[in-house]
View 1 (cartoon, rainbow, N blue to C red):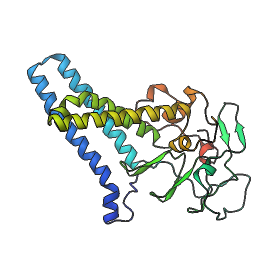
View 2 (tube, rainbow, N blue to C red; view 1 turned 180 degrees about the vertical axis):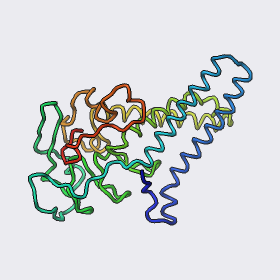
View 3 (cartoon, one colour; view 1 turned 90 degrees about the vertical axis):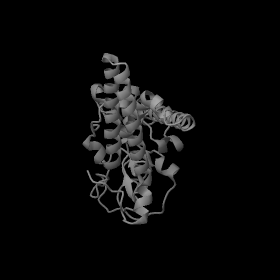
Amino acid sequence: MKFKGCEPAGPLCFFKNAPVLLIVLFIVSVYSSALISGAALIETTGGWKAIFSVSVFHVIFLATVVNFSLCVFVDPGPVPQVWKPEDLDQEPEEEEEDSVAELLQPRRILVDPHGVIQARTRNQNTCSFCRVWKPERTHHCSSCNRCVLRMDHHCIFVNNCIGLMNHKYFFLFVLYGLCGHQLTRSSLLGLTVIIGWVLSITMSLSLTVFVCFHGYLISRNKTTLDNMFDTSNGLYDMGILQNIKSVMGPNPWLWLIPTSATVDDEYINGYSRL
């Protein structure tokens, strides 16, 4: 894994990474406060219930940190520089930049015997910036200055795009973050009544919205860009179970564990199953 968020170096790098550092600082602050509260709980009440609560918190905290780190460092989905449609031999020619809505407009649809949707890109779309062929639902990110497979959005809080290879980690990060926050609300309130309530309400609303919204997107096999400029009319919807598997992986027992989702070679070769 290679961190790609500090190019070029200097003040721009600092400002791009400032939100990431802010999240790290917040996580450390919450953990320190919760650790003090947990130690006091064990000391005053004792018993297996207090120890169990503290243990559960540490498991959730670890899951949050791991998934946050993966969001930051995992490549969201590179487009192979050598890839091009199998039925075309010519190199991509530079073309005028299209609108996002036009890029999302589907054309020819293919479905394999396993029900996997394979959609050809609009006129075998090419990127006017990267000068490479773009598989279906691939978009160019101006912040990362690159194309990303199945791009969902660029997240300033991880200074990385959320795409094919790290969408699962992003969803687990906000999910475990919400669970951990519910366990540490009393710790936040201990900072001061006013600041505690502001932090508690803000975090609860933000994380709840993220979890619900991305849970909906995953269940419908959509990205944020698909949802904003939806011209597919359910083109990618393969049913809730298959939609979830396409992001979280084929094994339901591993959905809540930060393992990489299986990606078929067919996708990398230019056909979208997502």
